[in-house]
Image (cartoon, rainbow, N blue to C red; front, side):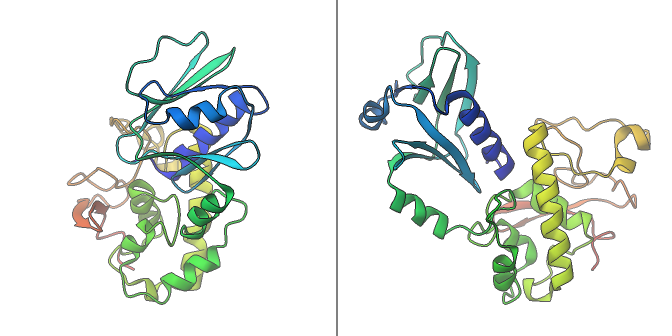
Length: 269
């Protein structure tokens, strides 16, 4: 499932291509046809993201709510758009570009009130200017649940996924099995600030890189990572490989229905 930086990047892309310009809206698959007909030919007002949720604004009060889920894909291309396949749930097109959406968990036309309800059930998003990290810490500091599980709970922090979860805990030497209530305010402030910085870089570069400059392949004289997800990381999907810092073996286990990766030697706090 895409992490929050990907959705914020999509919001930027949709906004740059379609804001303030009439948009042809269609649903070749047919599942969004009625809503598409209501929007077709009108300008898009704005695009924004909260965690893993994308919102495209029309008519000042109507929103296309998109959640990619596990299988959703977005394709962006230059006009003229090719003939759509019958798997395209939503196509937006103008005289310069088109964007196709396939296989999302959610693609629905919602009202302002329904949009507010989605925001209300999500935690603060490190990429949003209205985020309140103190609200997340209040919940974390009262919980006996592991900090690794809490970081994936979108009701507590929106947009953090398995990669950022594993990497930020490694970068701060935090044992992923520590209860949230044992995380100090200073540790949380450092984790939050790091998430903000890392995820902003993710939006800018459209990939996740988490290693410090002194730990890049060039600096360490090691081969670059080869992985479909791209980006240089410390522990994510590096199970049984040596840690870049201590040389110990990276461990993996199932936690909160996701594969957890960590270095027991470096993450002993």
